[in-house]
Amino acid sequence: MKKKATQQDGKVLEARQQMQRAWLMWGIGPLVVAAVLMLTVSAVWASPSTVDEHVLERGFQAVLALCAGLFLIGFWLDGRWTNSERTALRIRQAAGGDEFVPTRSQLATQAEVAFKSIATSANMLTAIGGAIAVSAVISVWAGLGVAEGTQLILLGLAYQVFVLSRHPYYEEILTAAVQGELVVPEADDHN
Figure 1 (tube, rainbow, N blue to C red):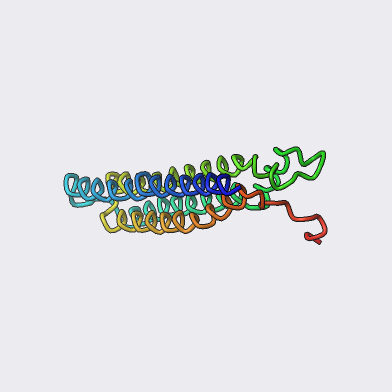
Figure 2: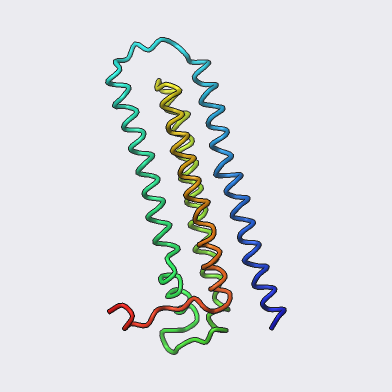
């Protein structure tokens, strides 16, 4: 039993390390690259703007609204895909729970469902963070100032802090799943 627990702990630890590496490489990395590119683009294409200030302000507001919308979509999708009750239900169904009540051991054998759900969500969050970073570079290239691009980079940084804050929750879900403790609440608990 101790060997099995060690394997389970190892699998959760491996998932945590993989999420941290992905966050650094594909979350923070693109922000740093985008900041450098944004400064480079602004230096190379720096020219006095002949566009009306109100047009630039509206353009920035539109880009900021799109990036904030991406942030909220990521937040919503992550909550939906990694919700412990939904994940527990999918694990229970994979263990044959529609026909009988699975044991902890049977639930634990289906922990891969949780791992896939968490990995999908983490990858999706990373992609959205990359889109926010790219928007900063495109915005400056399109004529917005470095100050506006910096605000988008800061939004991307806040988003990456959100992504990092999800990692302990993910680890908690994965640990419960490999131990067979991620169970669907009884129907009478919802009333």
